[in-house]
Image 1 (cartoon, helix red, strand yellow):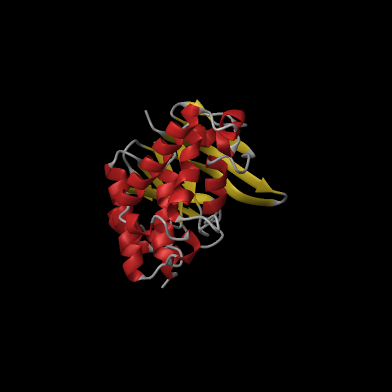
Image 2 (tube, helix red, strand yellow):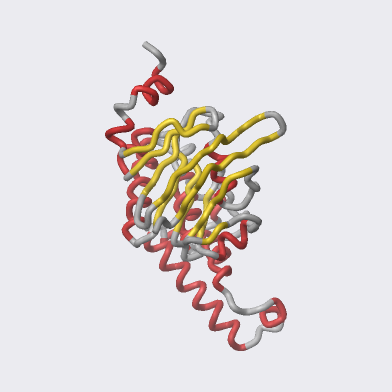
Length: 252
């Protein structure tokens, strides 16, 4: 069974049909990319999958469960984590503390137990801290654990963001343009980290403009144009698809 199934998904904003009858599946263990020119509907598609926008019609199913009507925090609770194109660090907090925020979705202590510092909350907080440090080490930035996250280099902030998403213990990770704003070296490093994440058994669905990154790490690619899916295949087939070539390179 597919981990994620998108079926005949549509999103209309007034008279604008931003996503038009898009269907595809993501199998467990895949890295699957969604590409397309600006305005193709990629981020709108992500917003519907993650529960940020309701679909006008169509369905999104995750682990065999339809997500219609679920809020983003409910979708996250099912095991779907997401990063955004624009990195969002909590200012005034260290890299470790930023990752711990993502880990608190696994917390069992309620508001009053935490406020009154009940004994079991100390143990849970220590476990959250330890797991967050493990994730920073996994993404090879543990030496920056106690550095203000906002002061880190852009590529390091992206790694912190990935660690924070992994803190949720997702089975599916949505990455919205993970290479945005990165130089060639940082992009290659992010590609390596994404592959490393997949090797943990975490399925990855990403939107990305950097074609070298997409072709290097993806198992399959979905191509959108003006809200419609025009192709879906392995990277080597997508590179040879006449419609895709026309969109990216023009008629001649």
